[in-house]
Image 1: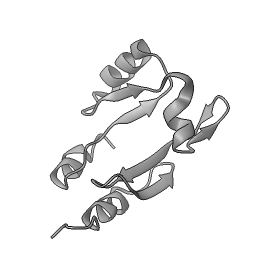
Image 2 (image 1 turned 45 degrees about the vertical axis):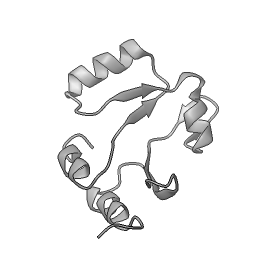
Image 3 (image 1 turned 120 degrees about the vertical axis):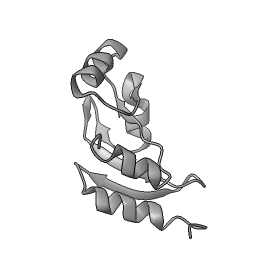
Length: 96
């Protein structure tokens, strides 16, 4: 995701990483990988549960595209190709 961050921004996306790890862990991870986007601490895995990204203590990597009107326009487990994500973004209602 980091390598495609510029392309996603140009398409109008706002990118976040969400994980139940601690803030200190996120900071080390972001520095190690030189991430260009922020990481959100999902305390108690509330976001993961809301988006059905895991169960119990296990959170599975999932990519979501949420349209400007708040609808989930794309959802895929793992690391989908950036082209699939960009395609979902370009199909938002009102896009030219």
